[in-house]
Length: 175
Image: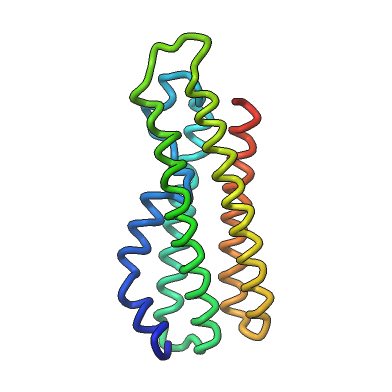
């Protein structure tokens, strides 16, 4: 790794890992308490929970790849760009994560649970953010065609975004 980007990556791997685990790209959104209130099912919870290790593994892999001494400067820049994008969306998704997880503190609404609309709104906004992020990652991938390692890591991130979007779509269909 070279220059400012190399220094910047070494200064934030712990922060990057914490933020990705905390935000889980918005889909570590659901906690066990959410299922009891009735808006999200146990299946929704399990699907969302399956994303935590997916995101953690992706971020760990990206950070480790960028730190490798045998990685070219161009490949490292592609990987670092991917990390920056994923960190940015984790910040954007944090407020929607809160809207979804706050349901665990609100119960006993019966059949007219107003949380359904709030959770649906948060899921929709999270999907919109992920769709925009996918487009940005594809643009980065197009700039990284000369760097196969970097481009491959970007494709892994796009796959995670697609998986997350698919799970959100599945949850939204039941809301």
